[in-house]
Length: 435
Length: 170
Image 1: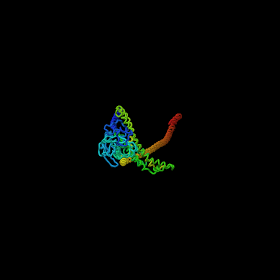
Image 2: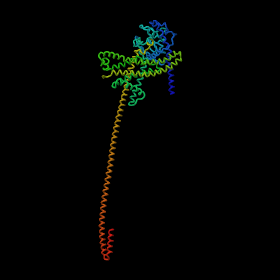
Image 3: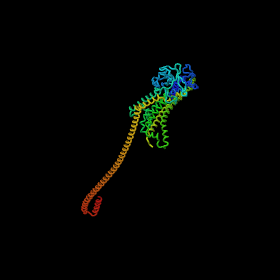
Image 4: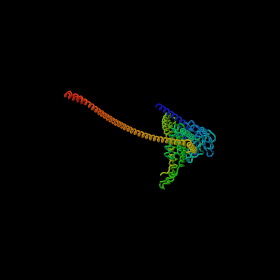
């Protein structure tokens, strides 16, 4: 009892101190960028992105920055993908950049060329590419030199694009302000992204995480599969025993009840792949101080998983399934076209909900944890009020521990729910006619 | 504005989508070949093995109980047989004793009868002997009487009486 109390206390103290050091380091460099977006919506004509005269330019050496802590920016920076793998805001593991420009074609190089500093901002540009908030951006202006060039601080500015105000990343070089645009996204501007001059096919933080986790799972399960061969007819032990619990659970509680005793075997490896891929990535994102890697909270990843599920489901759909979609039996004829419309919408909505549910839940969990950690700085008024910071640290540690415990449960639940719904869609698609 | 622009988790990007497809499909294929197919097959095989063992154990148990019932039956039969045999032996014993008794009684009766016969014979013989003796005696007496008669009547009479009396006593 005494020992347990003591070790809990030590653990709490450790988590407190580490949280503070992590976010404090983060925060110290946060003010470099956060100060601008408040003063820019003042009716100035920003159609020319070079008109930065009215406010602090990133090129001013003595530019005044307020010290306000930006919890939103910090949280979003942590859950976003990146071209460097940053651990504890101190270790930047470089990753390969694979970039395709509309006109200039492919360039492949290591992100170590950017010389990533705090907050994921690079000190150098390479072939007009720069690193801002851990992500590759490209300088828009054509007069910017190619090759490796030392660049100055980054900032934000607002410019008018198609009659809408839009935040842009600015950067200074040689006393002149340049604009940096982010990589292309497929949301057609609906979510603040859109097509730009280049696409980023890099091995990013999320891609590297997926490869690592997939390899880890592969080696774990290959060894488990080997122990089944080696220890045939014997009771399972160790890792084999642990993994068997999940495999048997997915088989007996998900596959068999939803797909049926006779057909489940065909789909069980797919369900298990989905389940363990999502579960392992969810848990990977919960490893403390690894930078809150938010792979399964990213739409790009969940979209692909949902599309693969939809393809597997619909390719395995039998005549009974398609007849229920296009010409529902057992209802009056005038209702059939209406139901067909609803069912066809369902074909799209089902994977859409899979995609949004997983991404939403995991991202929300990450944001909650990061927000609780952010309480330290809100309480401490960005380091001006140390006592407040200490109180905040104690409170936020308790809240964060609580949240992390919940997030581990959520990691399992979301992987389970995704697999369960996949199994239920597969069950509907392969159900035999029995009226 | 800045929040929306930077909320990149919600923006689908071609790069991440491309890598997701590639990694997941390779992962799926590799896991199918190297792990999940062999594991699920081994599990199925083991489940089947367990079911078979259970069935075999059940069959063995049934056989055992059958055997036990059979044993019980044999034992019961033996017990009945034993009782019957015992009863039979008892009966036989009684019969034998009775027979022996009867035989002994018959023998005893026969012996008694023969003894009585013998006694009768002996008695008869003795009687004859006595009669002969008495006759002889009477002759003797008569002889003596006749001889005495010559001496006196009274004395003769008392003498005869005395002799007769003696004979009766014999």
